[in-house]
Length: 172
Image 1: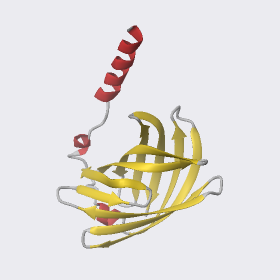
Image 2 (image 1 turned 30 degrees about the vertical axis):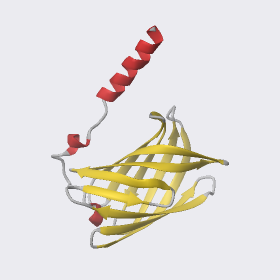
Image 3 (image 1 turned 180 degrees about the vertical axis):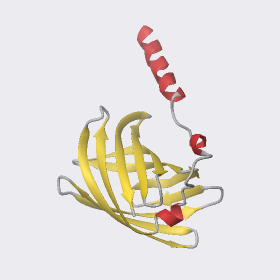
């Protein structure tokens, strides 16, 4: 019983300290996804395991294009072990700072919302590790630092428990 109380208390502490999108309502610059993710971009990132240890490093080349309120973001990843992958997002800008998105390895549709300089995405992804595929949830936070830089921090969860993290710096 004591162990259960400790686990519950820990979960409540984590839940209470979580950021909310509304924390960024009055911040600037206002993140304009269509403007930032338009044209060529580059990124550098790391993947961390659940203990915070860096397990992979990678680079990404991106090209974003928009027609009205629909954008395409093509991404080409190169990992430190030589693995190469690609993903193409189709992003729809909706009303009130909301976005939806799809990509080949995304399950269903990603849901996003922006406020001030922040954008938060939620989606499920089929993540391949060695010869296995795991369905995980991404809690993706993007912060526009200025016109040239966005920092992306993604929490990777399985059954609601953090199992990893991705940190990415994207530049125009």
